[in-house]
Structure formats: structure tokens, C-alpha cells
Image (cartoon, rainbow, N blue to C red; front, top):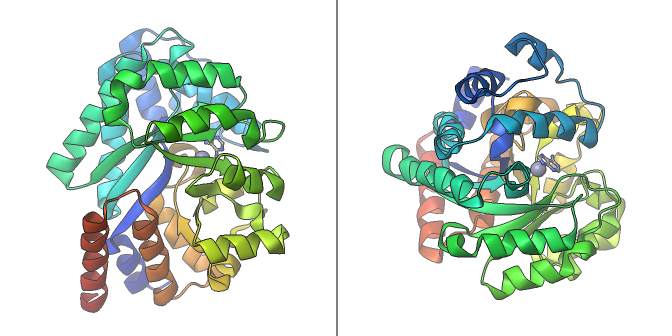
Length: 338
Ligand code: ADE
Ligand code: ZN
């Protein structure tokens, strides 16, 4: 890869639509927060923790990810975590970010949902004011827990609905199909929230169908199993459905063995609205720029395809028509100058 192309990617105005903010907790910050809050960790050092980041599948990652999140106690902790992410995103020319957060990971430990949301919202406001990043929050339900617990979480979030743009569905996929959450997603839609869901990361194409048909999602998170089902591909292409793909995550979690085998380029060339995102950057070897960079190198993506990926992200963002126009104009200006 030429340094020109790397620089072009770095400056490309882009949206990040699939980032679990708890997955941006770097080991150094995990240790700093553990020390600040008197939390005992299972690893003796930053190096030992990082050395444990050798995953064989989604569950092997989630076990460590939930343990890492146990250091988050105060509103300031949530602010500090999100602010660290925004500084990195800004360096990667992210102009719009939609952050997933997992309230149940925290409320299960006795942390009030208000502590979580207030800390994150304060960081979103600071990102807008100080970095010019438009930042939004998407509340995710943990799919390994029951739908009743998801409903209780949505109810607990009601005082904060003005601070949330949507709901999502994450955690262990196989055995927890989207239709398990039909009622809570209907309630969320009724409240005027946007809806997205992880589907087709490890789970089969049928889960993507039910995310679309039962949950009525507006984007699919991952969705890399779509290529196994031609009728599904036709549906995605015809409807302009966006997929928030996370290439480095897919390698770390062994969804693909190597980046050169990833199907992102094939989906892009078929006309699927694919985007590139980081998922859990502290655990998977890089933030959004690194995902663009390594994917471009492995799949030999050219400038036009990289621009298309950035355009897809800005078009698939939950923005107003005026915001989308402004974002796309910013991309066009960049591309004529760069
Ligand atoms: N939670 C955090 N990262 C996730 C992923 N890649 N899939 C499902 N749930 C997650
Ligand atoms: Zn994810």
C-alpha cells in the first residue's frame, strides 16, 4: 500500500456505525480504572491481559470483554472510556459516530443505568463541542439474557430516551435468534427509536431474515453470512440495506481465517451497501482507520471503492436529510481535493 493511499484513507470523512464502546477499553485504561475503583482483576499486568486476547470464536471473546467492563463504576469512568474513543476516532476522520452500549453488563453489577447513560452522553456532547464529531448512542440488549430482561432494560431507559437514538441486539448469537426479541423491538419502534441487530456474524442467514422481517431492522450488524443465500442477497441489494461489517473483528473471532478471504469486496461489487467499522477496537487490533487500511491492502481496494465505503457509512447513518447532505458534501469536497 502506498503512503499516499494510507493518507487518503486517514483523511476520508467517514461514519462509524458499529462500535461497542465497552470494546474500546484499552488494557491500560482497564488497569487505571481498576486501580481508581479498587476492582481486582484476574490478570497481573497490562501485558498479561493483552496476551489473553487470543480468541477462537465470539464466546471466547465475550467472556474477556464482560470481565474488562467490570472496572466501570462511576459516571466519570463511562465518560473517560468514551472520550478516549472519540479522540482516536477524530484522528481517523470520523465525523459521525453511533456508539453501542450494553447497559445490562453494568446494571447486573448494581450500576444504575442513569450513571451509564449520563457518562456516555456527556462524552458525546464533548465530542461534538470539542472535536466536531456528531455522536449518538444505541442501547443494545444482550441476547443471551431473556426478552423480559430486555423489556425491563428498555423501561429503565425511558427517562433517558432523548439521549438514545436506537436499540440494537448483541452478545452470543447462535441459539438466540432475533425473533426471541420480537416484542421488545416492537416496543422500541413504537417509542420512535431506530432499530438494528447483530445477525449473520456466526449465526445463519435465517437470523438475517428474521432480523429484517420480525425485528424490522434498519441496518444489519455484520451480516457477512448473507452471501450464502442468494435470495437474501437480492433482498439486501434491492432494499439498499446497510451492513456494518467489521473486518478485523471477523479475523480475530475466526469468522474468516485471513483478511484476504473476507467477502466484503464481493458484497460491495454486488451492490450491497457495506460499511467498514471497528466493533471492539481495543480487542481486535485496530480502530476504524486500521480496518480500512488492512482491508484495502488485503482485498486490493482502490480509491473509488474506499470512497464508496465511506459514502455508504454516511448514507446509512441515522442522520437528518440536512445532516446527510452536509456529510456527503464534505466527502465530495475531500475527494476533489485529495
Ligand atoms: N458485543 C461486543 N462485540 C460483539 C460482537 N462482535 N458480536 C456480538 N456481540 C458483541
Ligand atoms: Zn458488534
